[in-house]
Length: 124
Image 1 (spheres, rainbow, N blue to C red):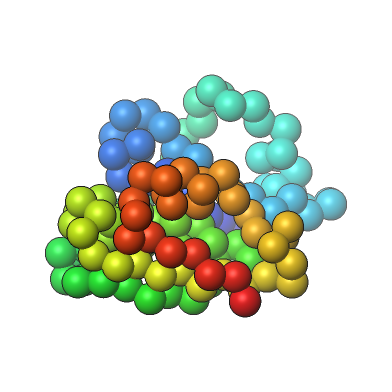
Image 2 (tube, rainbow, N blue to C red):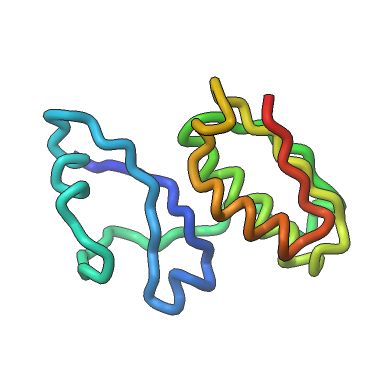
């Protein structure tokens, strides 16, 4: 069966030969159990390349709400808009998790906050 996962990496990462996925591992899950055993640097064949779903030039700012594993989409969209506009537009990402310690990829967000002064992450 076909499985779709949202990459955390962006198009430039993919073109450079890197693809980072966030995968929630389910005990007994056929695909997630297989993916859990892979180690960084392992080459696997993919069906289809990641494709852009938005044009960052269309956005003069962004307010986005995400929670749980949708954080991967939040990273992609926020980063695309920030990079396109060279950090000159406001981007607000509202993350909804039970606790701040439940935020996935916190280190990625910390890096984005450091790199882009117009990026703001709000926890709800």
